[in-house]
Length: 301
Ligand SMILES: C[S@@+](CC[C@H](N)C(=O)[O-])C[C@H]1O[C@@H](n2cnc3c(N)ncnc32)[C@H](O)[C@@H]1O
Image (cartoon, rainbow, N blue to C red; front, side, top):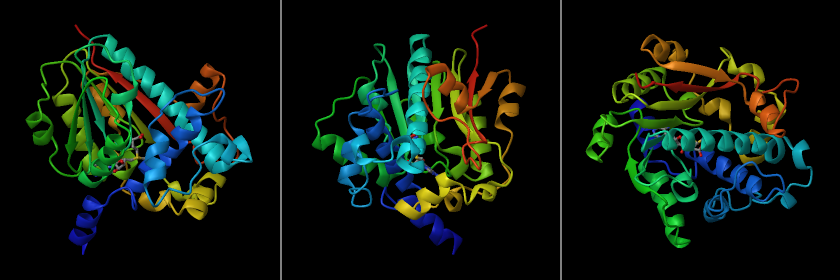
């Protein structure tokens, strides 16, 4: 029974389960792209949304969101993803320009950074996600003749399995500094897979490497079941995020990294809203309250 569920999840594409969350983020990026005050631009995002039957009717432009930022899903939540995209774009580019020429996107989904960011020469972007998600991504990117702006290496593998062999077999070099990203990923993984991921990042990171990931602080996520954000996502587009989140007690990944000598810092998304002068702010019964963005660096000695 468990094996069947696991096999289905492994082969699932973007039309259901956790794969559908990749389309949610893509729709948010599409809307953000067309805002007059956009924080990040992703011209590929709307093509993903319109190409998938599950999302073809979702908005991809602010004029399709009549309530604007007051809309909990396509206003506030979409803006959250826009802000997250911008902050992590900046983190990746800063790390790459400082010398980390290998970029590993863990749970890459429909992240089009390999195609849209101004990477320094010599960058290699490894994209890890499940095969069916990457197959859909490639179909859409081929249709719009997208050309990567770095060497791009897709790695179809499940992060609950031993993904290290797939990464190193694809040319990843642990002797070179790397910037790793787990954006909107860890809360879907079993605790053991998160522990393995952090152990692996530590083991494969040369000096000068960096990691960013998103985590949730809450011990009881169901506390926010009736929040406007989770309710709208569940009732309007059929994504029950709380049902998709893994319920294992979370490991303290930041402590694990610090214990191995990584410098770490943690921020709320609202810190960056204030920094950029736009983005979501706290509200009552806020599903974003416990979200944290963690940045870790293994400095050169
Ligand atoms: C919310 S989406 C985020 C995608 C991307 N990081 C972004 O921000 O655009 C979560 C992604 O994690 C991927 N994912 C979840 N569990 C995974 C697993 N066990 N192995 C590989 N990918 C996984 C999903 O397929 C999906 O693409």
